[in-house]
Amino acid sequence: MTDVAGREAEIRIEPVTDKRGRAAFVDLGRAFSDRLPHFVPQIRAEQIELVDPDKNPFFGHARVRLFIARRGGTPVGRIAAHIDELALAMPADQGFGPGTGFFGYFDAEDEGTARALLAAAEAWLAGEGMTRVLGPISLSVWEEPGLLVRGQDHAPMVMMGHHPAHYAGWIEAAGFARAKTLYTYDLDISKPFPPLVQRIVQSGHKNARINVRRVRKADWDAEVATILGILNDAWSDNWGFVPFSPAEVAYAGQKLRPIIKEELNMIAEVDGRPVAFMLTFPDLNDALAKIRGKLFPFGWITMLRWLRHPKGAGMRVPLMGVLKELHNSRLASQLAFMMIETIRVEANTRYQSMRGEIGWILEDNQGMVAIADTIQSKINREYVIYERMLG
Image 1 (spheres, one colour):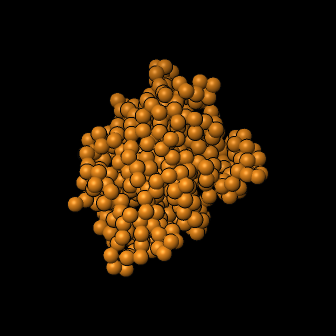
Image 2: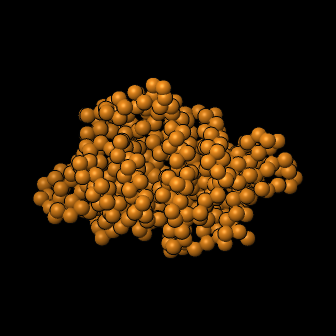
Image 3: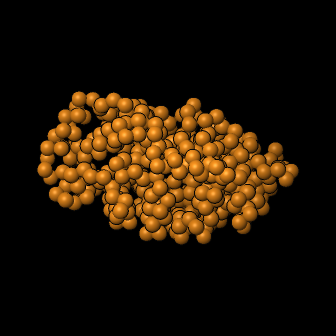
């Protein structure tokens, strides 16, 4: 328990130690989020599961401490501090590496509370031997990395963070600087891509060596293993990369299966060998907004109908990858364009979808930025990961 001097003397930072505390931690975050314009309520049980060490496999390679701030007994903020052993093992020049800890799940009533929470997270991380802190990342870098600093004027898509603009000023005032910026790109999928892209796609379809196929849910476990194998290779040199553990692969496969539509998810093969993939999720937030994040008593009926046929839903491309051996080649770009055009047509004709979103994309990922520009997509959301040295 921590007391903070000065204006913040009233604030008490309490660690979460049990199941009831984790539920209170989640409910506090939900209360903060519910104030935000365009926020989409998520399913509470799913949020609690993410901070449950018995259910989320992230805890199998991470140390996590959750904190709630109280003033006069009233909860006024929350934060998570965590150390990912897999991130510690990565090379320092890739963003993480030895001595790097994280904060996430950050919410605060005012700047004084924000400072107290950040100080508590830093103190715990320093006590665990960390020399640097990055955040917000909640909890895994594959879940919700970064603070939303631009794009609060529209609703987030599935698995996207949504934060008030003033959090950035509070974090920066506490001594944090930008470490990395991530973008999402908005895309009109109701019309064909530019002629250049169409020519590249047509050329690929004439190449007998290339086969772009749907993901097969009947062979789901093997398909997930194929996709994660490509991902771990394709992203291995990227800033902030942390490999998926086997337990996380199984967990992700189980969680994602209900929203996977075969015709919206592609694996590209060259000479019969899988070398690239692209995942596309119908925007589950479209359904969650209708049921206000509540499955009971009748929300589950709406959800089941939506899952069967998400008509008109936006489409999000959260992940794609091409084996590293093909990076910086014309073939890599061609495969990407072929997959995204196939998905665009399916989404528009089968589900009457009009809008897509690609991201996150690192600001300095030149290959992905070039693809986004070529298909005439536009940046619509900006997230920032901050850093600060400890000690």
